[in-house]
Amino acid sequence: MIIKNFDPQHFVKEYWQKKPCLIRQFVPNFVDPIDENDLAGLAQEEGVDSRIVSHSDGAWDVHQGPFDDFEPYCKGDWALLVQGVNNYIDDVNALASIVDFIPHWRFDDVMVSYSTKNAGVGAHTDQYDVFIIQGKGSRRWQVGLPIDATTNAKLIIPHPLLKQIEDFDALIDEVLLPGDAIYIPPQHPHKGMTLSPCLNYSLGFRAPTNLEALTGLLDESDSITQAQSRYCDPDIAELRVASSSPMQVSTNELNKLKDTIVELLNSPEAEQALLQYLSRQGLATEQELSLYEIADISEAVAQGETFEKLPGVKPIYAERQLHTFTFYIDGNRFEVDKSIFTQTVTLLESRQVQGLPQGFTLQTAQSTHWLNLLLQLVNAGYWDFAENSDQH
Image (cartoon, rainbow, N blue to C red):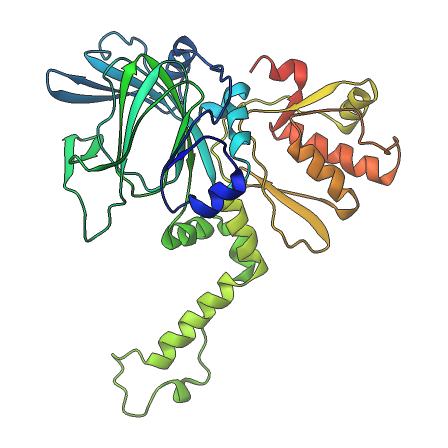
């Protein structure tokens, strides 16, 4: 289960959601895109999900950020963990491109941790897939066979904000050095122990339960309202037998209700709502955006200004497209003319764009569609002038 020459196709076939593996030099010549001081700075910001997990004198402690002062919490062996760092730092966001062989809608975020010698969060399991890339320093990782209902390890809660499990037999027991990575599927017990002060980058993937997906779809109620229908039973005599008690709900009535729910789920509106739900990333766009006019964007493009996609922005779109091309970013729906499908996909995949797409000239229908799209993306806070994005 140690891979030395990583091949995405082989990995997906043999390992993804099947078994853990250690990947030597997953990122060759790896250079940390962030240091512990940058990480601490993020942990001081409102709206950034951060915590410090410490172990001292046999006791575990957990403190949630933001932090004004770290000294009271960094006791004994400790680790600072910050979620969603890819949404704030573009060089960390770039790590997500390494796992682009997995769809964007499955990707959650990059959690970055800094830990001192002997620090960790204890043995535990997760409900999601994760690649953990080793930055500076070194860490020993132990991973076991998956835990299911029949072999469930004893749950240990040493702190209200920390769930652990009892020790397990290690299937993998290896030390990671800079650029190495370990892949851990859901429900596999694992434990990391820092050997020397280090940084780790956890690329996590989400997999909603069917109930979570249904709840998420219903939360997008504005998209699905038009597809709803009210229960009616003009054929009530056929749905119920003559001897039925008024207290009784017949099997036919239950089936009819379920059929209306299935009809709703199969509607185009439900598909749109589901895509909106899957696209949500919790991006930290600015509260007060500078709103531009089409003339501003047209002039900037004509002058060769560079526009840049902001960190963490990951558009998704359905394979099936009808009369227009529709895509979603963080719950927002965008629709463009299909005549610029290729140029739109190129824009969405690019980190930076400068000028009109190749072959486009100003004052044509296609360039107008494209410029209006760029205007929408900039005003929504997902793209910006490159000189402005450097200040984020």
